Length: 384
Image (cartoon, rainbow, N blue to C red):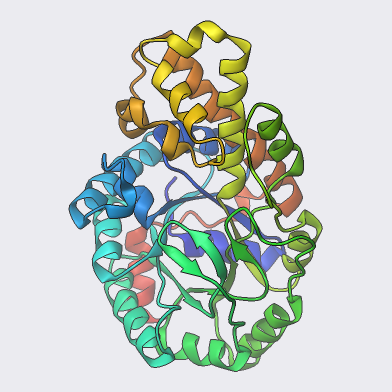
């Protein structure tokens, strides 16, 4: 069943575990993510980033995606999630990651998302509050959850870039919750976007603890989110490089730290890079094991892009020759079917591992099966 993200986060907060939130950029990824959550009987949060919507709308140069591209892509992602998740026995939320403005959030909501993030973290505090409040006002009327962000994470992810971090001030976080009415807040406490988070990165868990304690003291019923939290598994990086890749300085957040912060008030942990790495590794392995596939009419162009971009690991760079498969799930022949299997297996490897570590396995029955309409009524009455 598709539910507002708030319902999933409420269960995680009550039971003291973290809910992984996993980015998807293709129909096959959405399918695999839902299936592996079902296998572990875990609630699921699937995320489509703002520019992922552009890519799923057919814009291969997704950094230049237009609002119309994003509207089309939001519908495509939501269609896939509904196909595999609407009748599932587990609760599934579809969340917009790093929405840039109100229009991007509206596009996602109209496309079928049950949750949106508005990222005003680069703005002055008052302007961030104003923008987030505007999105909350629109989204809550439809029962859609809203996540904001306060503090700046270093690193690169799609259009999100910062050379340095600015840690979240706990007192400002409480003020932000009060002034915006936002459901969840992404905080800056030592994580970092991208595949190079730095060797031996240490999360400042005391920031999360302080914010959560202040929220409890003030009676704020909200949730905390950890962005830039991919673990960047060394074994996958090593395998990519052994297959001809040239990835350098790839370091993630240690899983032990993420498990620890899940007990310190962090309710949602975002992961994207790990999935990108696993899918890319799988495709490289496939072509290495079957040289004839390198000249395939339907899949050979993917191999050429892999060879041309040895330092890259984002599958969106390599999958442009099969955009119908990416956008709609169509599989034209056996060679493309083998690529799809690579995609699905990469998602399941990463997501399954983190479901177990984060502790969301077996928790699906604990999430209230609330509809968007019911949640909209709760927001209207202030009883959420």
